[in-house]
Image (cartoon, helix red, strand yellow):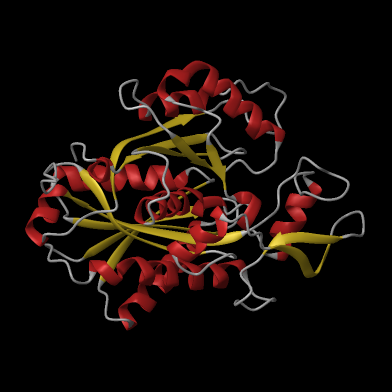
Length: 356
């Protein structure tokens, strides 16, 4: 087979990194999710409003008692170091830019978001990596927005390589109590809640021009990325019919390059499942089988702002290990209590002998 020809202005994923309760690298986490291994366990001391131990998905190598911000710093740093191993050998112009995708709920102030990013950048500096960062804060779908901005910067020519990291933790005491008293915690008394988790996912993006110069093969190409906004949010006196997610799907899907499998952040809440169902009814032509999807929250819990970068890690790991179902996949996320919705279509067509 002839060597693939990389599209010079297209954006490619060249490496990924992950820190999750079921694995501390992208390949290990993906293998655990593929096997259905769950990290769910009783929280060591938190009790729900019915007097039962809360069930969470916790990174067991982190201290049981620590602030969410400290947990995010460790998770985000290690995910980036995992992703940047390959990137260190690549020649590119300028310093490394990092787009941080963070939670507007679990890190509600701009000061706490900036402090978390600065702490991660300082840790990278100690590891010999010079970088600068920009923070985006929203809900689960903020990772799509971060990737979208990174793609725009790469395609404009202002930068040659950008890292994106999504990091989140629901496991602070105040966060868990808030989820519980909002009626969103999965318990023996509430089957339709979600299990809080934590994690970080990182990916490094560059253009085909840099691939050709460095003679490297990427993990995936970003075929399309889109966002939408939902006005009928969870907890309001409205009925969500998936308008925001439909907008994101329509921007990311293609009738000619149909998606064979999806990675999503469905977490057990009926609002999320209904929203997905309505969106698929309008955009079904873009899927080979809309029912072929992976919802990793059943293994590592709801990982919030880390959702989409970790989905990218799952998709690229499937291609790397040759168990992927096809060459086009969709990663998507909904922020639930905030308007942002996002979808990202990835392709790895060169493994199938198609155009890159």
